[in-house]
Length: 398
Image 1 (cartoon, rainbow, N blue to C red):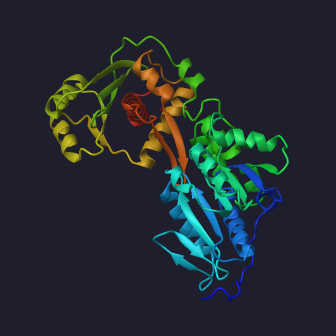
Image 2 (cartoon, rainbow, N blue to C red):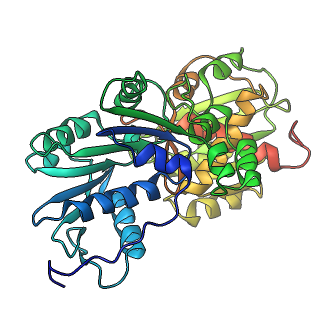
Image 3 (cartoon, helix red, strand yellow):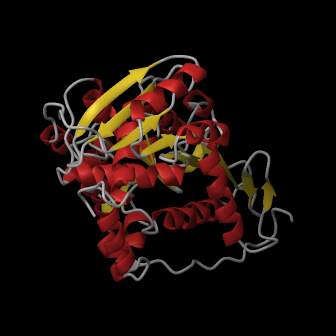
């Protein structure tokens, strides 16, 4: 392939909201949009067309995602969308070079300092609310000499982030800036999403998570999946009844082993935590749990731990955390909290619940404590709620 070859290109079908938001005359366009609404595909088409129209050697165009791995996904998707013989791909550097000599680079924003220095003619910042503000600072500098255009896209994630503030700037009508909002309803109308799937997501997800991911409406809870107001409504004196079910989160490295017991009404009636060697930890779990049903975090410790506990009784069951299983667990806990089905006392558990957060990725919502904090109590509570929910005769929600 030489730079003299012509590019055979036909724009794929895009619906009106996509075209209006992305293919606008404004240099800066900020799009707050529902998940799976076509914002990524639309911007891939836009960036490709920018590179085709650029028509010059050494002209660079960037796709920037929060981390390198997400850029790899976009790289593969664009390659699949372009016809064979239409480009040269470098799978190591994540670049696609077109016949006219323009190159599209796929970069991660996890090291913003690495984004300085180049002259770039067009940029897409994908999942902007998950990117550091320094990414925006660096990219803005790369567009100075070229006066290149930029598209900033993503889901809404609270109000206290640079992307939300930039969206408000664009929405204010400042010259050269365009703001657009694409909701799940828009995508349903365009037959990009199915009404039944969105309705199911609304049933499955916490209300504030659904609003942000599908309606592009910011939550006041800043990424907390349970809802701060809902959490406080569940605060009560620790129940003095006997536990009917236990959830156990086992210590990893600097974490704590934490056990939460729920009474028959779903209220926290026991909360114990400690750090000790494995042998002592397992004995304490057995003695504390007694004969009550218990769901135990078995992630990373293998089946040996569950086998040890099973020798003491048949009431222990293991649960391995994965991205999908943790999402399921936390979304069930969120429903219990938002519907005021449980109570818990003030203290460390309350603090963990208030600081807990979610981040939406292409593979789903990921739930965890902020960097440097712990979620042992949240996980133990979620395990107990989940186990009570699925164990006949011991729950209030069946």
